[in-house]
Image (cartoon, rainbow, N blue to C red; front, side, top):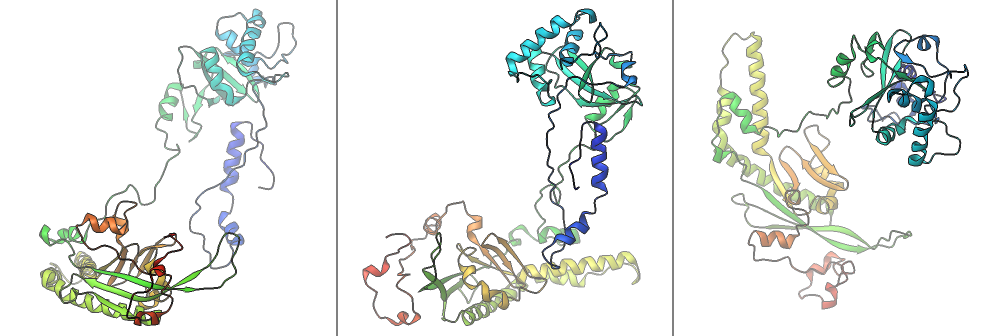
Length: 480
């Protein structure tokens, strides 16, 4: 839209709605994307700019069909035949509502206006009561305010609906910026229209009852529906009459690892807010597991990051092969039952084909479950994986479709391949849990040792036969 659209009536909103429906948003997105690699997927939000024209409820010119309406007082012309020009039409409606005669409205109207001035303290030139001030109007005069707009076809729409906090209710018709008093609401309109779905009703009672359950109200639709935990593979197996005992429904094997890095000093141009001092180069990785035959820690040392990660993945693959053999011993009967189960019916029967396809899906899912070993690290999502991320993707073949990565900011929450699933154990601990607290919670007597990180800037220092000086254990980061 090249210029703002003026909206003063319900019909103008309808015009804005139709204009929005005609917009070719997809073509606009394709024309403004950075390059052809970007593909529109979802329109997440729309921004509207609203410029208030400050048209309060005051004087106005009514069309003939409203002036001739017997169920309302137009309150446009004085008794002497002159038009009102003081913008006090809403206060006149209040005076009529409170029982004052049409011939003597001026005195109570001015009294109500003076009370309003004390409450709101408007500018010297009063232009009327703004729509956003209607709640204050109700509070000031202790009256419910119901504002409607009547069309020439006899259809009315609700402009402002009171919360019903007071005993008395003032019904007002609003046309542009003029308010008229509705003396008989039941005869006011021929039909009543819902402002959200535009349905018509014969009575106001039916309209109010419908508005409470209108389908076109604002709805909050959450992708994926409501939250529910996913079924485990053992729960899915129950649908195929494969009931695994509860004690056998956990995956008992896992691998743990930890990287150590040397800090090489770097000389780079520093900025006002950032200064590079060292680069972390991984030189060793320690691997251990609870898999029989691989219970002892294995330390791999190599200053070449690519060869280090390659040796790590190769050793972990050996562990996963052993886990595969153990899993077959534990759950082999499940695979046998799924592969040997016969389906009744002819080979061309659609139901038989669907059943075979379902068996193949659950079989593939369970085979992946029993061969994928969790690889756990402590704070590995933020540190260890970032050390080797440049080469880890190649060695895990993350470009293949069956692999995936879950990343949160700069942390790698999960890296999944067919045989390994890298996860950070800190995602399952309470916030603020340190490594020392984690060891203490599980009764581990060993403690995290002290390491001269800033002193260790060359892999040849691993050949030293004695500890470095005491000053070498100082950390400029922790200041101790």
